[in-house]
Image (cartoon, rainbow, N blue to C red):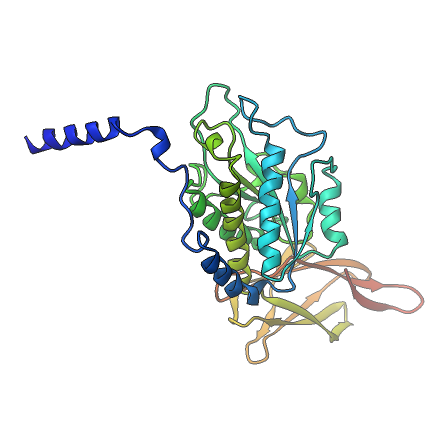
Length: 352
């Protein structure tokens, strides 16, 4: 009897509520009031000040084909609005922000990662909005963040996945979106879109890089808020918080020790200083020479990693080092070359 009565009360309540009485989004507690927002930004300034961040609003100019089915949502425009708000938050926290575009212009895909290189950026964040490939699908909607390659591939850099996790968690949270069914945490390898190749802007980036698909402009519910400036600011806030927390977790540094470089009896010896304020997790450190994983010695007292390997007598030896701190954050991509020059006099040097 009580169950029937309760159901009837709920039915009457819902019948009396119009769709307009339900909010399309919530205002994040640390954003909705100016004073609290500024306080949050000030807290992150310690970790963002002076950081060089490149934002890439996807599409634009001649590429405006991605739109909602009613034509009211143009992906390129929403990408740009979110990117500009993100730029504003980052700059308020003292970061130096660069963008592939700040208006509706055409920027060739091939140029975007090169632009980030030219300003010596530390992070590359490409902002997009997704679409269902099925014409009748107006239901699918989730937030996803892509990183390049997969674990186990030589091209996979764990720092990309780290950045993706931080951005995905906070963006998904403030938008109130799930992360999709294809991933446990909402982050995805770009190989699921282009197997063995990935996204051009991620594949050709030399710095930690992610591509964010904030939501679906083919969703009947998402289109109700994508052209809303307040909601675009909330989206930007989520990405901002993710970037700030990524830096807050620390980035391990790998420093070449020039005096250690030596070549004797067909054996190269070279050392590196590993440093991080939270300490190095040596169990998650890896060294590769000529794309093969190698053993190394780690001096815990001095935080010095030493590689000693027999090599070919002449030529270039590609070197790659990955290390992580005790908070799980990995070092930026570290790929160098040890060059053994064989001329009238043999010598070796370390190069990019």
